Length: 380
View 1: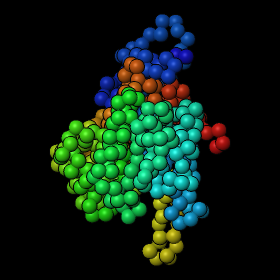
View 2: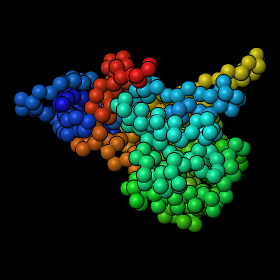
View 3: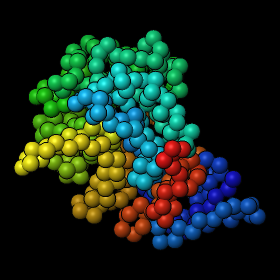
View 4: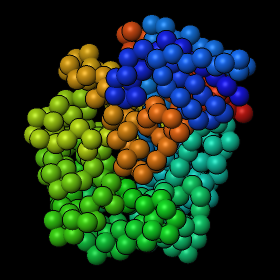
Protein backbone atom coordinates (compact mmCIF):
# COMPACT_ATOMS: atom_id res chain seq x y z
CA UNK A 1 0.00 0.00 0.00
CA UNK A 2 1.28 3.46 -0.96
CA UNK A 3 0.22 6.63 0.82
CA UNK A 4 1.39 10.08 -0.24
CA UNK A 5 1.08 13.06 2.12
CA UNK A 6 1.52 16.30 0.19
CA UNK A 7 2.25 19.91 1.10
CA UNK A 8 2.82 19.34 4.83
CA UNK A 9 4.88 21.68 6.97
CA UNK A 10 7.17 18.97 8.36
CA UNK A 11 8.70 19.02 11.82
CA UNK A 12 10.78 15.86 11.91
CA UNK A 13 11.08 17.15 14.72
CA UNK A 14 13.65 19.50 13.13
CA UNK A 15 11.84 21.92 10.85
CA UNK A 16 12.10 20.78 7.21
CA UNK A 17 9.52 23.18 5.76
CA UNK A 18 6.94 22.18 3.14
CA UNK A 19 7.54 18.58 2.10
CA UNK A 20 5.85 15.54 0.60
CA UNK A 21 6.02 12.21 2.40
CA UNK A 22 5.72 8.77 0.80
CA UNK A 23 4.65 5.87 3.02
CA UNK A 24 5.03 2.28 1.89
CA UNK A 25 3.22 -0.15 4.16
CA UNK A 26 4.11 0.78 7.74
CA UNK A 27 7.30 2.70 6.93
CA UNK A 28 8.31 6.13 5.69
CA UNK A 29 9.98 5.60 2.33
CA UNK A 30 10.79 9.12 1.15
CA UNK A 31 10.66 12.74 2.29
CA UNK A 32 11.18 15.34 -0.44
CA UNK A 33 10.01 18.71 -1.72
CA UNK A 34 8.00 17.09 -4.49
CA UNK A 35 7.35 13.38 -4.84
CA UNK A 36 6.06 11.97 -8.10
CA UNK A 37 4.55 8.51 -7.67
CA UNK A 38 5.28 7.74 -11.36
CA UNK A 39 2.01 5.95 -11.93
CA UNK A 40 1.93 4.10 -8.63
CA UNK A 41 -1.54 3.59 -7.19
CA UNK A 42 -1.15 5.82 -4.14
CA UNK A 43 -3.76 7.27 -1.81
CA UNK A 44 -3.13 11.01 -1.46
CA UNK A 45 -3.64 13.17 1.63
CA UNK A 46 -3.39 16.91 1.01
CA UNK A 47 -1.95 18.39 4.22
CA UNK A 48 -1.69 21.97 3.00
CA UNK A 49 -1.86 24.37 5.94
CA UNK A 50 -1.06 21.66 8.47
CA UNK A 51 1.99 20.71 10.52
CA UNK A 52 3.24 17.13 10.27
CA UNK A 53 5.10 15.68 13.28
CA UNK A 54 6.25 12.24 14.42
CA UNK A 55 3.73 10.29 16.49
CA UNK A 56 4.13 10.87 20.20
CA UNK A 57 5.79 8.47 22.63
CA UNK A 58 4.53 8.08 26.20
CA UNK A 59 6.95 6.04 28.30
CA UNK A 60 4.89 5.75 31.49
CA UNK A 61 1.26 4.61 31.20
CA UNK A 62 -0.74 2.24 33.39
CA UNK A 63 -2.31 0.55 30.39
CA UNK A 64 -4.07 -2.05 32.56
CA UNK A 65 -5.11 0.65 35.04
CA UNK A 66 -3.47 1.63 38.28
CA UNK A 67 -3.80 -0.56 41.35
CA UNK A 68 -6.54 0.14 43.86
CA UNK A 69 -5.36 1.77 47.08
CA UNK A 70 -8.78 2.07 48.68
CA UNK A 71 -10.15 -1.41 47.99
CA UNK A 72 -11.22 -3.35 44.92
CA UNK A 73 -13.68 -0.69 43.80
CA UNK A 74 -10.79 1.77 43.36
CA UNK A 75 -9.00 -0.34 40.72
CA UNK A 76 -8.51 1.93 37.70
CA UNK A 77 -9.90 0.82 34.31
CA UNK A 78 -7.53 -0.11 31.51
CA UNK A 79 -6.55 2.30 28.73
CA UNK A 80 -8.47 2.22 25.46
CA UNK A 81 -7.10 2.55 21.95
CA UNK A 82 -9.14 5.67 21.24
CA UNK A 83 -7.82 7.41 24.37
CA UNK A 84 -4.26 7.01 23.12
CA UNK A 85 -5.08 7.96 19.53
CA UNK A 86 -7.03 11.05 20.62
CA UNK A 87 -3.88 12.60 22.13
CA UNK A 88 -1.50 11.51 19.36
CA UNK A 89 0.20 8.76 21.37
CA UNK A 90 1.27 6.13 18.84
CA UNK A 91 3.91 4.39 20.99
CA UNK A 92 3.28 3.56 24.64
CA UNK A 93 5.15 1.81 27.44
CA UNK A 94 2.91 0.00 29.91
CA UNK A 95 3.84 -0.71 33.51
CA UNK A 96 2.40 -1.77 36.83
CA UNK A 97 1.96 0.54 39.80
CA UNK A 98 1.63 -0.23 43.49
CA UNK A 99 -0.29 -3.41 42.67
CA UNK A 100 1.69 -6.34 41.27
CA UNK A 101 -0.85 -8.92 42.37
CA UNK A 102 -4.34 -8.21 41.02
CA UNK A 103 -2.79 -6.25 38.14
CA UNK A 104 -0.06 -8.75 37.29
CA UNK A 105 2.61 -9.01 34.60
CA UNK A 106 0.75 -11.63 32.55
CA UNK A 107 -2.24 -9.27 32.24
CA UNK A 108 0.10 -6.40 31.39
CA UNK A 109 1.74 -8.47 28.65
CA UNK A 110 -1.66 -9.43 27.22
CA UNK A 111 -2.75 -5.78 27.12
CA UNK A 112 0.55 -4.78 25.49
CA UNK A 113 0.05 -7.39 22.76
CA UNK A 114 -3.59 -6.33 22.33
CA UNK A 115 -2.62 -2.69 21.71
CA UNK A 116 -0.08 -3.90 19.15
CA UNK A 117 -2.71 -5.98 17.40
CA UNK A 118 -4.98 -2.94 17.28
CA UNK A 119 -2.28 -1.11 15.28
CA UNK A 120 -0.42 0.91 17.93
CA UNK A 121 3.09 0.15 19.15
CA UNK A 122 3.29 -0.97 22.77
CA UNK A 123 6.07 -2.14 25.08
CA UNK A 124 6.13 -3.00 28.76
CA UNK A 125 8.32 -3.02 31.84
CA UNK A 126 8.71 -6.07 34.03
CA UNK A 127 8.62 -5.64 37.82
CA UNK A 128 6.47 -3.19 39.76
CA UNK A 129 6.85 -0.99 42.88
CA UNK A 130 8.13 -3.70 45.15
CA UNK A 131 10.86 -6.20 45.89
CA UNK A 132 11.48 -9.00 45.23
CA UNK A 133 10.90 -8.12 41.59
CA UNK A 134 8.18 -10.23 39.93
CA UNK A 135 9.05 -11.46 36.45
CA UNK A 136 7.45 -13.46 33.64
CA UNK A 137 10.41 -15.86 33.43
CA UNK A 138 13.09 -16.64 36.01
CA UNK A 139 14.75 -13.22 36.08
CA UNK A 140 14.61 -9.64 34.82
CA UNK A 141 17.41 -10.40 32.35
CA UNK A 142 15.55 -13.39 30.93
CA UNK A 143 12.37 -11.31 30.58
CA UNK A 144 14.28 -8.90 28.34
CA UNK A 145 15.86 -11.75 26.40
CA UNK A 146 12.85 -14.00 25.87
CA UNK A 147 9.78 -11.75 26.13
CA UNK A 148 9.46 -9.67 22.97
CA UNK A 149 7.69 -6.68 24.52
CA UNK A 150 9.79 -6.27 27.68
CA UNK A 151 12.28 -3.39 27.34
CA UNK A 152 13.14 -2.75 30.99
CA UNK A 153 12.18 -3.03 34.63
CA UNK A 154 10.15 -0.90 37.06
CA UNK A 155 11.05 -0.10 40.67
CA UNK A 156 9.88 2.45 43.26
CA UNK A 157 11.91 4.38 45.82
CA UNK A 158 11.60 7.39 48.14
CA UNK A 159 7.91 6.60 48.59
CA UNK A 160 6.22 5.34 51.75
CA UNK A 161 4.66 2.60 49.58
CA UNK A 162 8.03 1.57 48.10
CA UNK A 163 10.26 -1.34 49.26
CA UNK A 164 12.99 1.16 50.32
CA UNK A 165 15.69 -0.41 48.11
CA UNK A 166 19.32 0.13 49.05
CA UNK A 167 22.10 0.92 46.59
CA UNK A 168 23.14 -2.72 46.17
CA UNK A 169 19.60 -3.77 45.28
CA UNK A 170 19.37 -1.01 42.69
CA UNK A 171 22.74 -2.00 41.23
CA UNK A 172 21.67 -5.63 41.01
CA UNK A 173 18.62 -4.61 38.97
CA UNK A 174 20.82 -2.41 36.75
CA UNK A 175 23.01 -5.47 36.23
CA UNK A 176 19.95 -7.48 35.18
CA UNK A 177 18.61 -4.94 32.66
CA UNK A 178 22.13 -4.43 31.33
CA UNK A 179 22.83 -8.13 30.81
CA UNK A 180 19.37 -8.75 29.41
CA UNK A 181 19.85 -5.82 27.07
CA UNK A 182 23.22 -7.09 25.85
CA UNK A 183 21.73 -10.36 24.68
CA UNK A 184 18.36 -9.10 23.42
CA UNK A 185 19.69 -6.01 21.64
CA UNK A 186 17.18 -3.84 23.54
CA UNK A 187 19.81 -2.17 25.79
CA UNK A 188 17.35 -2.07 28.72
CA UNK A 189 16.44 0.54 31.35
CA UNK A 190 15.58 0.58 35.04
CA UNK A 191 12.59 2.90 35.26
CA UNK A 192 12.24 4.27 38.78
CA UNK A 193 9.12 5.76 40.35
CA UNK A 194 9.94 8.55 42.81
CA UNK A 195 7.75 9.54 45.72
CA UNK A 196 8.05 12.65 47.86
CA UNK A 197 10.23 11.38 50.72
CA UNK A 198 13.14 13.74 51.47
CA UNK A 199 15.94 11.39 50.34
CA UNK A 200 14.75 11.70 46.74
CA UNK A 201 17.23 10.27 44.24
CA UNK A 202 20.33 10.47 46.43
CA UNK A 203 21.07 6.77 45.83
CA UNK A 204 20.85 7.29 42.05
CA UNK A 205 23.20 10.26 42.32
CA UNK A 206 25.68 8.12 44.25
CA UNK A 207 25.55 5.48 41.50
CA UNK A 208 25.94 8.11 38.75
CA UNK A 209 28.99 9.59 40.50
CA UNK A 210 30.60 6.25 41.35
CA UNK A 211 29.72 4.33 38.17
CA UNK A 212 29.17 6.88 35.37
CA UNK A 213 28.93 4.17 32.70
CA UNK A 214 25.74 2.92 34.36
CA UNK A 215 23.93 6.27 34.33
CA UNK A 216 22.12 5.73 31.03
CA UNK A 217 20.50 2.55 32.37
CA UNK A 218 18.73 4.62 35.05
CA UNK A 219 15.42 6.21 34.07
CA UNK A 220 13.92 8.13 37.02
CA UNK A 221 10.44 9.64 36.68
CA UNK A 222 8.06 11.96 38.60
CA UNK A 223 11.03 14.29 39.08
CA UNK A 224 8.95 17.46 39.54
CA UNK A 225 6.89 16.05 42.39
CA UNK A 226 8.76 18.35 44.83
CA UNK A 227 11.17 21.23 44.41
CA UNK A 228 13.91 19.32 46.25
CA UNK A 229 13.49 16.37 43.89
CA UNK A 230 13.68 18.72 40.92
CA UNK A 231 16.98 20.18 42.17
CA UNK A 232 18.37 16.63 42.48
CA UNK A 233 17.14 15.92 38.95
CA UNK A 234 19.22 18.85 37.69
CA UNK A 235 22.31 17.31 39.29
CA UNK A 236 21.45 13.89 37.82
CA UNK A 237 21.21 15.46 34.36
CA UNK A 238 24.56 17.14 34.91
CA UNK A 239 25.94 13.63 35.52
CA UNK A 240 24.67 12.68 32.06
CA UNK A 241 21.31 11.16 33.02
CA UNK A 242 17.87 11.46 31.43
CA UNK A 243 15.16 13.12 33.54
CA UNK A 244 11.41 12.59 33.13
CA UNK A 245 8.73 15.09 34.13
CA UNK A 246 5.22 13.72 34.69
CA UNK A 247 2.54 15.90 33.13
CA UNK A 248 -0.38 14.16 34.85
CA UNK A 249 0.93 13.52 38.33
CA UNK A 250 1.71 15.50 41.49
CA UNK A 251 4.04 18.43 40.83
CA UNK A 252 5.37 21.49 42.60
CA UNK A 253 5.16 23.57 39.40
CA UNK A 254 3.81 23.21 35.87
CA UNK A 255 5.90 20.88 33.67
CA UNK A 256 6.46 23.63 31.09
CA UNK A 257 7.95 25.90 33.77
CA UNK A 258 10.17 23.10 35.04
CA UNK A 259 11.53 22.53 31.53
CA UNK A 260 12.42 26.20 31.19
CA UNK A 261 14.01 26.22 34.67
CA UNK A 262 16.06 23.13 33.80
CA UNK A 263 17.26 24.69 30.54
CA UNK A 264 18.16 27.83 32.47
CA UNK A 265 20.32 25.73 34.79
CA UNK A 266 22.27 24.27 31.86
CA UNK A 267 20.44 20.98 31.34
CA UNK A 268 20.43 19.95 27.69
CA UNK A 269 17.01 19.72 26.08
CA UNK A 270 17.78 16.20 24.82
CA UNK A 271 18.03 15.01 28.44
CA UNK A 272 14.39 15.83 29.29
CA UNK A 273 11.25 13.82 28.56
CA UNK A 274 7.55 14.13 29.32
CA UNK A 275 5.34 11.20 30.31
CA UNK A 276 1.71 11.19 31.40
CA UNK A 277 1.45 8.62 34.22
CA UNK A 278 -1.85 7.99 32.45
CA UNK A 279 -4.52 5.84 34.14
CA UNK A 280 -2.82 5.88 37.49
CA UNK A 281 -5.38 6.50 40.20
CA UNK A 282 -5.97 10.14 41.16
CA UNK A 283 -7.76 10.80 44.43
CA UNK A 284 -9.07 14.26 45.29
CA UNK A 285 -10.82 15.42 48.45
CA UNK A 286 -12.80 18.63 48.16
CA UNK A 287 -11.54 20.95 50.95
CA UNK A 288 -15.01 22.40 51.53
CA UNK A 289 -17.38 19.45 51.18
CA UNK A 290 -14.92 16.78 52.27
CA UNK A 291 -16.17 14.54 49.44
CA UNK A 292 -13.50 12.32 47.91
CA UNK A 293 -13.61 11.55 44.19
CA UNK A 294 -11.49 9.24 42.02
CA UNK A 295 -10.50 9.42 38.39
CA UNK A 296 -7.87 7.98 36.06
CA UNK A 297 -4.85 10.23 35.53
CA UNK A 298 -5.23 11.91 32.11
CA UNK A 299 -3.29 10.92 29.00
CA UNK A 300 -3.52 14.13 26.98
CA UNK A 301 -1.33 16.48 29.02
CA UNK A 302 1.97 15.65 27.27
CA UNK A 303 0.83 17.41 24.10
CA UNK A 304 -0.87 20.17 26.10
CA UNK A 305 2.41 20.98 27.86
CA UNK A 306 4.34 20.92 24.57
CA UNK A 307 1.87 23.41 23.10
CA UNK A 308 2.21 25.61 26.20
CA UNK A 309 6.00 25.52 25.89
CA UNK A 310 5.64 27.00 22.41
CA UNK A 311 2.76 29.42 22.93
CA UNK A 312 3.46 30.60 26.49
CA UNK A 313 7.19 30.05 27.00
CA UNK A 314 8.45 30.80 23.50
CA UNK A 315 10.32 27.54 22.96
CA UNK A 316 10.55 26.71 19.23
CA UNK A 317 8.18 23.92 18.19
CA UNK A 318 11.01 21.77 16.82
CA UNK A 319 12.59 21.82 20.28
CA UNK A 320 9.42 21.32 22.31
CA UNK A 321 8.41 18.30 20.22
CA UNK A 322 11.63 16.50 21.20
CA UNK A 323 10.22 15.94 24.71
CA UNK A 324 7.63 13.49 23.34
CA UNK A 325 9.41 12.19 20.20
CA UNK A 326 13.17 11.87 19.85
CA UNK A 327 14.06 12.14 23.53
CA UNK A 328 11.90 9.25 24.80
CA UNK A 329 12.92 7.22 21.73
CA UNK A 330 16.55 7.71 22.76
CA UNK A 331 15.85 6.94 26.42
CA UNK A 332 14.02 3.73 25.49
CA UNK A 333 16.47 2.85 22.69
CA UNK A 334 13.77 2.60 20.00
CA UNK A 335 15.72 3.00 16.74
CA UNK A 336 12.77 3.44 14.34
CA UNK A 337 10.57 5.74 16.42
CA UNK A 338 10.34 9.46 17.11
CA UNK A 339 11.48 10.92 13.77
CA UNK A 340 10.19 11.60 10.28
CA UNK A 341 12.84 10.08 8.05
CA UNK A 342 13.14 7.21 5.54
CA UNK A 343 13.13 3.84 7.29
CA UNK A 344 11.25 5.10 10.35
CA UNK A 345 7.82 3.83 11.31
CA UNK A 346 4.97 5.81 9.75
CA UNK A 347 3.58 7.06 13.08
CA UNK A 348 2.49 10.62 12.35
CA UNK A 349 0.41 13.49 13.72
CA UNK A 350 -1.12 16.44 11.86
CA UNK A 351 -1.71 19.71 13.73
CA UNK A 352 -3.53 22.84 12.63
CA UNK A 353 -2.02 26.33 12.84
CA UNK A 354 -3.11 26.58 16.51
CA UNK A 355 -1.23 23.32 17.21
CA UNK A 356 -4.47 21.42 17.79
CA UNK A 357 -4.32 17.74 16.85
CA UNK A 358 -6.47 16.94 13.80
CA UNK A 359 -5.21 13.66 12.33
CA UNK A 360 -3.18 10.65 13.48
CA UNK A 361 -1.58 7.82 11.53
CA UNK A 362 -0.34 4.68 13.27
CA UNK A 363 2.06 2.47 11.33
CA UNK A 364 0.82 3.96 8.07
CA UNK A 365 -2.93 3.65 8.77
CA UNK A 366 -5.29 6.51 9.50
CA UNK A 367 -6.44 6.37 13.13
CA UNK A 368 -7.94 9.87 13.49
CA UNK A 369 -9.20 12.06 10.66
CA UNK A 370 -10.41 15.63 11.03
CA UNK A 371 -10.57 15.17 14.83
CA UNK A 372 -12.77 12.10 14.49
CA UNK A 373 -11.48 8.79 15.88
CA UNK A 374 -11.41 6.07 13.24
CA UNK A 375 -9.43 3.40 15.04
CA UNK A 376 -11.03 2.13 18.23
CA UNK A 377 -10.51 -0.95 20.33
CA UNK A 378 -12.60 -3.99 19.54
CA UNK A 379 -14.92 -3.51 22.51
CA UNK A 380 -15.18 0.27 22.52
